Image 1 (spheres, rainbow, N blue to C red):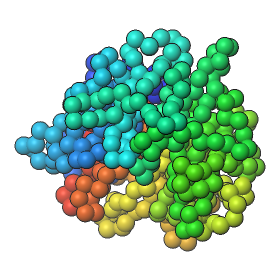
Image 2 (image 1 turned 180 degrees about the horizontal axis):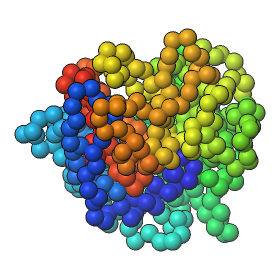
Image 3 (image 1 turned 90 degrees about the vertical axis):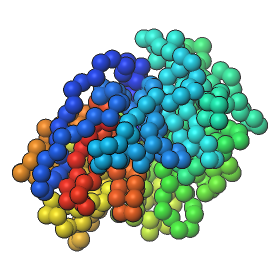
Image 4 (image 1 turned 135 degrees about the horizontal axis):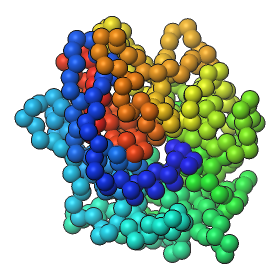
Length: 415
């Protein structure tokens, strides 16, 4: 996610505890009938840092850390007798706000900062890592190669039960000196770089993805400000960050030196790794590529109309009630867009379009979601073939897309 979006999300989280907006109504697409969109207890103007499934429960970081049983949450929309609403997690550290959560080595970790740190200066947001235990959340004290005591944490990204932490120190001139740490649940280790000095970094952009290479090389990819890195080993504990120097990524008709790399995501649908830039350009690298990582990225001809966020795969039944649609969704500063896999159309020539709408019912364009900053998504297969799609926004809450009546139609609900 999202250059200014990461830092802005953290700041917006601070101010997301005021009164809720009214419920919204709308339909992702529908065939037969319209239903009222439900509202499930998270502030409608909340900024959602991220969301995870841990055990049987969802956890959403939005300043407050919210949780709900996943099955009960789904039943809330499909069973009128269900009471599966979100609530604030118990046992949280006192006077702390949660920025992000993630599962690492079968434990749930969260980045929390002091409410008293909140000021007009974002550098005052000094966060710590906490781990969820039987008796609540306790501060995590690293062993081995520790994070220095004066390091300030910005984000935790957990992927495939492995954690990556972005953190920085402030020098005498108040300049941020960044580092990226690998976290395996036992200790933190700084990822060394062989081609660039991260300590001169000034951007808060940070995201991680894994590709689908069968040979295991260059398995992890990391966006960091305006740079893209890959790891020299599939094992982060023994890897070095290598700068990807593909000039195509850092050029283009709208490119400037300040363009940040945004979301990075591996799509199983397209069999490719996708990378977005703040100018709206999207690049891809197919799983079949075996060349060095500096010469393997291709630009999609079409562009995301507004600054993109992150991606996610999603499959659903189209508005004709029978056609299977396979799409890559991408968030933006004005809702989200679909990138549909179509037989006979190359990835390069595929277009970013607004979600499918039905002329019979209220459309996506009527929702607050349509004009929200959609920074990321989360998908959970609640039962065989039945997936729930969540859209995480800034200042417009958490939205879920639920399937009703055996795939006849889906509805967006504001959580």
